[in-house]
Amino acid sequence: FTGAAASLKGHLHGGANEAVMYMLLEGETKSGFCKLIEHKLSRKEKIMGFGHRVYMRKMDPRAALLKKALYSLSHKTGRQDLYEMCDAGEKLMREEKGLYPNLDYYAAPV
Image (cartoon, rainbow, N blue to C red; front, side, top):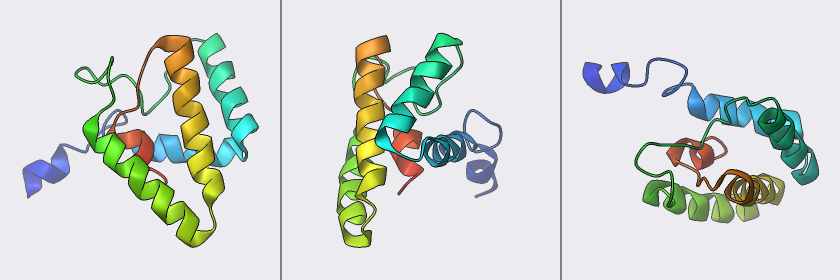
């Protein structure tokens, strides 16, 4: 158990989903979130939730499951905006960088 908890230490692992949630909150809307990502890309900043070594060129299957969970949860809670923001950000990153989301990207809002 201690090893599992320790594996989440650091900003690239345990903090990645938290950083994604902060970006969603900062973006506020689908267009605001996309503008935030575009701004970060123009400054060559790291976009958390993308770029897993194994899943750089295909979607992390764990992320695909969480995306479905987010879709369901967002409709049950009336927060479809979170799903729409994540989906738009995913498409933007695929178009701009050819990257797919990893587990942290959809784990944040779920």
